[in-house]
Image 1 (cartoon, rainbow, N blue to C red):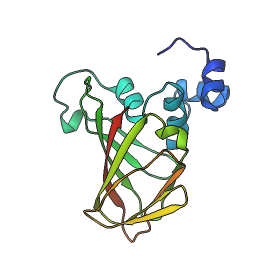
Image 2 (image 1 turned 45 degrees about the horizontal axis):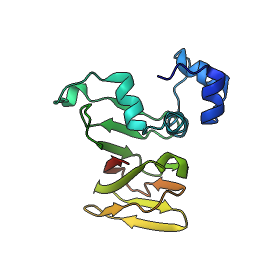
Image 3 (image 1 turned 180 degrees about the vertical axis):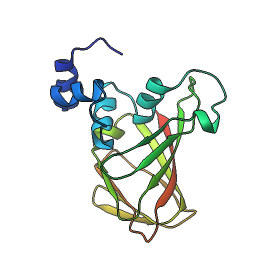
Image 4 (image 1 turned 90 degrees about the vertical axis):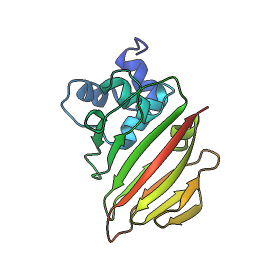
Length: 167
């Protein structure tokens, strides 16, 4: 994307050269946390990184063509819903298995604003020191970037939509 060496990307992302090399060669499947750090190093969202890797342009993105990625560590499933466009909006559908937690650093939200709409299940979203306990139909607009944790307390998966707007 920027013709950086592995050493430069490792320095900018905080992901080791060995791990980046293993990901590049397809020898390991990166976790959500690693992909977010790599995307942040490029100044983009995880969704944009995945979209650029897997999608072609066009105004319509059919369900069968929407990139789906699963975090090997938590089972978190992320479906990129938005077609590639010049719009600053991205829509992502997530299914977080019951009991699973995903923690992301504030840096991953430094250049975006987002809202989370819970479709089904329960979601405890920790934003800094504040815990938001979401029920189906609840919609949360995130505040200033801070470390956060997504947790599906169960008894079933938390299914939610994330709407991202790039600054």
